[in-house]
Length: 213
Image 1 (cartoon, rainbow, N blue to C red):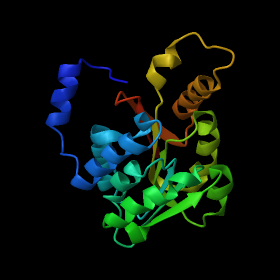
Image 2 (tube, rainbow, N blue to C red; image 1 turned 120 degrees about the horizontal axis):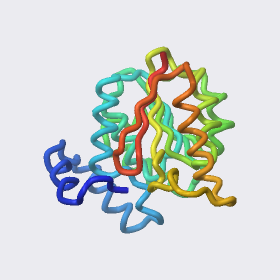
Image 3 (cartoon, one colour; image 1 turned 180 degrees about the vertical axis):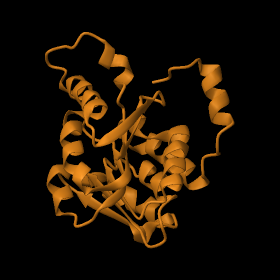
């Protein structure tokens, strides 16, 4: 997932904001106890998410794909004092792990967990959002976009993770590779949909910023 030489990547990380202590603990425990720790946003991308959230200063945040809660805590750093972050994940087994770290942070009372299918949960949320982070099953990225776009305030931001998919979006598509197929479709959707303006950043596995016009 690294697109620049390792030495340069190390330099970038060392000259960016330090990883907060609580997130260092979350990072370590995820790698010690949870399957597929590679899914964690991690130090550098986490600081990018934090910075974007602080620039947006959202009242309401929606996250699709909680995993162990690292990215939710990064996004919460920019939330308004009266705001709320709603995070959705299909895996109920991680809910207690997430909540432990949410409650250790200063944002526990503002973070609301939802367990289940995001395509069913999002329409039931009676809120408009200023910031959305999509980092769940890749096959449904186009579906998630179509659901959230009408729940996004004008000027609101959609962040989409893994859009470069370790470079697979450039390779010959295999018939059974539905995730890559969906991401190729999704990237074209963001490029061509006149409701948003989009920039793709080569950060980790690819991070797209789309702004609703």
